[in-house]
Image 1 (cartoon, one colour):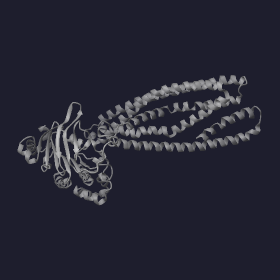
Image 2: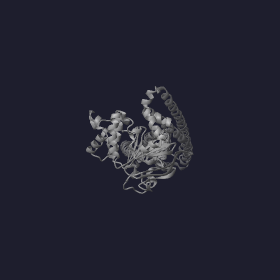
Image 3: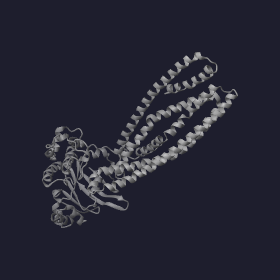
Image 4: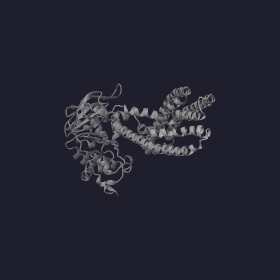
Length: 560
């Protein structure tokens, strides 16, 4: 880059020779040298500009790609509470859109600014040699304009920060709408969603207009300063030439060098929008970088070599909203190989209890022990690698059936995948697919039925070979025949493992070693199926109502 900047000064120097020597002193023999030197300077400047642009631009792109990867890895390490309070679209906007703004700065923008600043520094040294009093006047004006530009940029930074937030909100709404497109169409809510998205787009446009106005003011001020400098140079420079303190060639070179000195200010003004957005994007990216992650906490926790499977809840309380307990002093003990079923009306605390068991949240009071060790002292990565989870609405990734089954055990071979698939009765429908296990399931598994997705999720849990298994309505999307078949597979999966089951369909939990009945976050009954039926309490009434009513969910709501 230094060679490129030095080559930039060749043409101004040759201009002085042309005027002072060739034209005024009629030394035409210098023209050949001037032509050769000029061509060489242009070629050298072009070649070095290409090389520096390519090297620095590629380095900038690599830095942005590394930034995106590091942000993605960091976001994955955030606690679940962060995702509960942050929209997916907002995170996508920060990782992709904000880094794209930074990419503009680190790419050609930084090359142009660095080159212009280097040229300005070299030009300033040459200007001092030509006429230092006039140089000091010019640099004073440019310094004052720099202060004014800094003030303008402070306002632009705020504007473009709000612009980025508005863009994130629009992206979040778009992502949410497209992710729930089936619900949108089912309720004919296209117009409602269009209105909601329009409101966010209008907010984005409003901040865009403010940014354009700010950049226009910056550009107008820069033009005013450039015009004032040009007028100053014409008057002051002409005065210096008339009094013999400068030649005409010196004046021409001086004017050209001042233009080079002012180039960084002109480029910042020209790139005002891009630079402002880039700086604001850097601020939003920085927010992610300083957000505490689970890995930071894990660094202070002890490793976990293995999990046997003994789980104990001691006086556990949890609150989502201050003053309102979702769980109230829950005591529970599950031994290795036992199955604990959680039942109760909606909002009774079943899912909250399982979230605590998965260490997605921490108890507000009390503690959870895993094999006698407080869960808060255990390294989460080690602990969760021993968990298996099958949810009611299981998430499948847009890949093959094979990849989704292997998700919890990436090193598993095909035979292990097929064995898990047979146990979960996946092979019954996979064998009828043209691509079999290489069938692409689509986003969230949209190409499979609800029951098929659930079978794949069960196979995924089987292959992961967990020590603690959590089943949240694991057979809710299956017909009676499939449920009966998969129940055998789940029984095999539960053998030797500690299992927690959330089920509205009580027929699926009658064989549980312990049934916990929750209501308003409290344990109101516990025991085996036979013991609870003999109590003639809540569970007994629920059991009777469920068999009398075809909708188990309705029975639960009446019980609550």
